[in-house]
Image 1 (cartoon, rainbow, N blue to C red):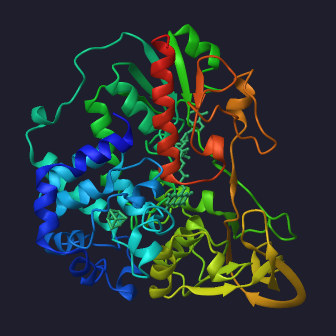
Image 2 (image 1 turned 90 degrees about the vertical axis):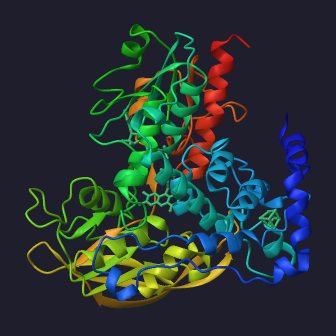
Length: 494
Ligand code: FAD
Ligand code: SF4
């Protein structure tokens, strides 16, 4: 059944009619959008507890009533993995929380993650009819996704372990290797296991999850959510090998010799970019990647750490994306007295999720928009003591539609004792260099066929940030799923 047939079939389910009669569209649209309960700003800025607390059952069912169950659910067009949004939302309205989670899982392998970190305001919620045509806040699809997946997790964790096993009965006997355990690799591995392949995920680091583990902090995405999803993959029969760098510990040829008939590359884009301005090598200036990885993966911010990270008191984070917001909020939690975002455009152009900007402000982060650093100054002992920033103005829109920053020549000096540079990432060229035959772009991303994510090297598929450059969790997952279907077709000789 294609997706439009599925929408039709689902809409004609008898319970949908019952629900439609309960309120008229106008009555439904009169309910106000729910707010996400969260910890108080000043309190949470000093600890690592999860900031958003999740909706109560009453709040979730109340919010679900707002959904109009549209004949043409445009919200789904905004979802890169086409989650059947009205169906799961109406399940919640009826109190069928586990069924709601099941509907989400039909197309999304990491709902607890997506419900927390997807930029819904730019995706499904931006295309919801409320936002598009009615001038009202969209249905809180992300909050509801998180609600359903949290209820599912609680129910599964309460089961006896033998009840949770879902390993497919039939194996094709064919082995597939997945490189990288981020969202692209995990979603590809999960689907491949469901198709009956023997899947092994090779991960360079000692922990699994990619950016979900070492990038996004626990106050946004607790490790228990990532662990739960990985445990589900293990229950499906997926094997994981950590501390294995493909291209170093094992080569492409080693994988072929070990009998892997197809390979999915989801190795991400973990190489930080710098601005190449004077003073970037001073002590106290580092990339977001280094900072967040050390704090999240190596516990470098905890007392007694073997590899402590420096804890600045006046911290500037350069950039306006999610990584920048995570870094600046982490700096506060590590004891900064002042933490600021320095961004060369205005707040309207910031790529970060709205919720993260809002939360950062509530926690006391200062925003120095329309400014760009041009130099970091030495305290005489090789450590950063200040930065020189240039005031910018907004010019014409660039190729991506965002207005470009134009330098004004006005410079000011700002005292800082730590700078975290968060101006983008590039893929690590290790895999493209080791897998000869891959076509790569100037930006070191791998070129794939957009239909099935197949590369120019036979039997090798790729997706996520290694293909797109720095993108989003849901796009990486979508690539992983598409590649899994491509590998299935390829190995079954279609
Ligand atoms: P990754 O998550 O980077 O995973 C790649 C994995 O491959 C890593 O574990 C890496 O160690 C491993 N690997 C690399 N090379 C090798 C090798 N040679 N051999 C074996 N393993 C290898 N997106 C959102 O949608 N919402 C957000 O709120 C958000 N916040 C973010 C915050 C931060 C701090 C960062 C850094 C990114 C954020 N993103 C967010 C972006 C999102 O996390 C990425 O787009 C996504 O994780 C990409 O998934 P991936 O699987 O392609 O790569
Ligand atoms: Fe519900 Fe909005 Fe989707 Fe319509 S567009 S089905 S109101 S979530």
